[in-house]
Structures are given as structure tokens and as C-alpha cells.
Length: 77
Image 1 (cartoon, rainbow, N blue to C red):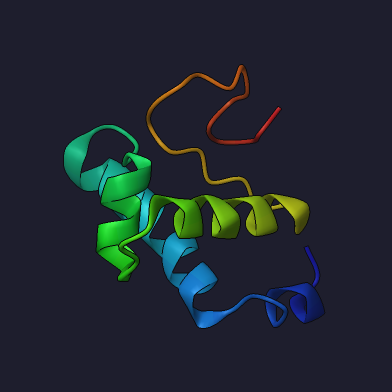
Image 2: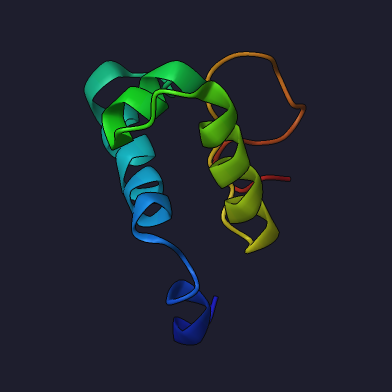
């Protein structure tokens, strides 16, 4: 990903991208959508899902714990 693409992220999206690996390191598993939202200051699960979708569109996959997507949580494939 180019540096210019990283500027397209909002501050909240940056926090989500930083939070997920930290959560995994601390808890040994990915955060749920609700846990991820609470960690970055979002109270609505739909808002978290919106940001996750926008991140995926930019090539950054943050896979929360929950329903299996069939994708690797690390590379998104």
C-alpha cells in the first residue's frame, strides 16, 4: 500500500487498524465487533462494520472474531 493511500484513512480507521493486533497480542484472539468498537470509541456495531468495510476497500483487512468469513484473518485471502 502506498503512503498516499494511508492518508485516506480516518483517525478512527487508524485506531481500528492499530487496535486489532494489540487486542490479539493481549487476549490471544481477535476482538468481536462490539469489543473493537468499545476499544476505539464506537458504540454502534453497524458503525464498526462500516469502518471495517471501508478498510477492506482500501486493502486493509481487519477480521473481527465471530462468524467465519472463510478468509485468513492475517492476509484476507
